[in-house]
Amino acid sequence: MYYEYRDNNLFWQNTDLVEMVAHIEKELERDYSYTGPFYLYHKDILMHRMSFFQSTGPAASSGIPEFFYSVKSQSNVHILKIIAENSHFGMDIVSGGELFRAKVAGISPERIVFAGVGKTFPEIRDALEYGIKSFHVESLEELEAISRIARSAGKKAGVALRINPDVSANTHAYISTGKEENKFGIPVYEFSSALEILRSSSSLELVGLQAHIGSQIQDVIPYKKTMEILISKAAQIPEDIKKPFEYLSIGGGFGIDYEHPLVNDPDAKEFPVRSLLGYLEGVQKEFPYRIILEPGRYISAYSGLLLTHATYNKQKKDYRITITDSGMSELIRPALYQAFHPILPLVRNGRTQIPHDIVGPICETGDFFLKKYPVYPIQPGDRLAITHSGAYSASMSSNYNSRPMVPEYLLENNSFRIIRKPQTLEEMIKSETSLL
Ligand code: LLP
Image (cartoon, rainbow, N blue to C red):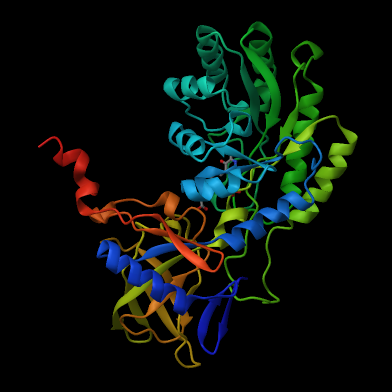
């Protein structure tokens, strides 16, 4: 999508990666004595992806954000600040930690919605205190808990009921959320009980209905089915509790193309956002609700890569294993969802690709990036771009195998700046050593 080779050197949205990476590595070594992998983000791509939503948004004139960026996909505060500068966007958060990040990024409370099946007492209290727009409520017990906490704080809580529409999103089982058997949302048969709770509570205000059916979805049809369910449920809400009712949220989940990283590849195919927005515009004309979306991956995935170095090769009978200096601690998606991330060498050697397993250094057989995949021959020391690592990569990273968190860089205006320093060994174990 955003990559191309020019004279065998990899370019990323017109940035010469060979040159840029050399400068970054020099800085990392000079300032931090660090020579390992790092994430790199491209602001132009992030802005380009956001523009898909703001240009044809279903409620472009409402003045209130209609897109709530899903913070979990990429939560570095520098990235969040860029998102916060766009008035079409709010933020969809799922924890007290994400609330904290959103606050630091400077997003105002009315631009925050809070999802998640297990919001705790302190999380609800702090979000109420900040005055967020609404809680996306996932169970009757949670609704009662929010009511109690709001009452004792003397506040009114905006809530939207997250409905489980029992719709299949045709995606990986681990990221499917809208089926009856999934843990998410309030089942339709409990809807009337939820309305009863709302009627009897003076500290709750029903501001919307929401659904999120899964992630990496390629088809508009499940969204249409879901929207129809939300519309029919909204029609069942009695007028006395429908007073501030404002919106229907269809969630996020818009899939990208992980298979074809090069520009102008005619086979590249991603979720048809424009077609969905067109459909939603029609809905919006017919019904008096604002429609909101919660995109994550569609905005952030292409705008990041994980830069890694080949350390060793092993020759097997009919393929090669290349071991790199990053692993599932930096990108767990292949291990968790059998996800595919194309890997492109910064310098292309030769024309023939040979089958490779590209793996990490971690002591797990599941620690791999690619299996039997044809790539240009790789030599130890070669730099590799693990593409489409802007979403669910750094935000899902860990210290497994006691590997410190790796740095993050942002490319902007043809320049670069560090947006997360490499974690030092001391920092990694400080909360333990401080108790010795
Ligand atoms: N809204 C809600 C309520 C969500 O739970 C999510 C993602 C989103 C919006 C954004 O979904 P997106 O547009 O990014 O697909 N770690 C997995 C993805 C998990 C998604 C969790 N919820 C992966 O790497 O594929």
